[in-house]
Every structure is written in structure tokens, then in C-alpha cells.
Length: 164
Image 1 (tube, one colour):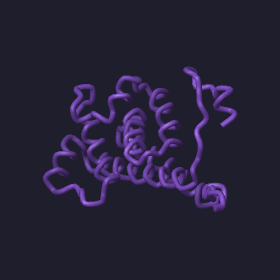
Image 2: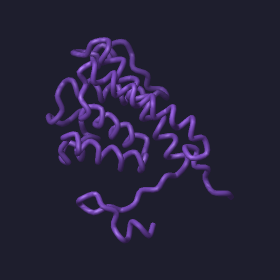
Image 3: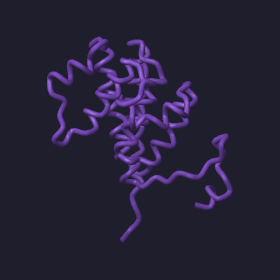
Image 4: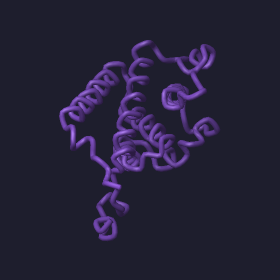
């Protein structure tokens, strides 16, 4: 068996276009009043569902930098049962999970209305686009088998991580 093709490196022009989509979504999120912390919670949750090690590493650190506490990140898989997430975050996470788990679990009209509670059309559209883009990046990293080096508590690559 041959090694995996790093599709981001093999087709850099396509990957650059994907990164531009992310920048456009972030700009739209900012214009809609959605902060970076909420986008990063969404990115982490989608990456958890998809099992994308590389994106989890990137977006966990980005979430912390955006002000999300390690406790809230640790409890993210249990967001429905936790009181640590507000209604807006719950709506964003509901949308993110619906976009990610499309097989046999489409968001019906009642669930969609509940997820949208408190979100306007711009916010809803941005959250759907953010979910779509992180899902795409998850696929790139998973299929390319991007690796993650071990890091210390300050985020520096450890000696063991550099050897892997």
C-alpha cells in the first residue's frame, strides 16, 4: 500500500480556496455578531463527532485562545446535559450536529425551529456555513492522515512529540 496523499499539499490551489472560504465565513460571523469563541466551540464539536485529531488539536487551542475554558471544552460532548452553555451556544451546537450527522438524522422542522430560537437568518446561515467548512477540513485531515505532535501545557511540541 502506498502512503496517503496529502491532498492539501498535492492541490494547494484548492486548499487555498478552502482557506479563503473560512476567512469569508469568519468575516460574515463577525458581521452577524458571532464571536470567535462560539465558532471555535462549533469547530471543536464537529471535529469530535468526526474524530479528526488534527482539527481537534488546532481548534481546541484556538478555542482556549478565544477565551473558552478547558472545563467547557472538556464537557462539550455533554453540552445538552450541562448548564455551562447558553441558549445561543446550544442553538449553534444543534445546527453543527445536524450538519455533521446527516445520515438518517436530518433536522426536522420542529427541531430546526428550536435550534433557530434566538438566531436571526444571518446568524443561522453563518453557523451552517461554519459547520460545512469544518466538516470539509475534517475530511481533508482525516483522509490525508495529518498527524499531531505531542505538546506540553504551554502548547510547545515535546521531545517525544517531535519524534513521532
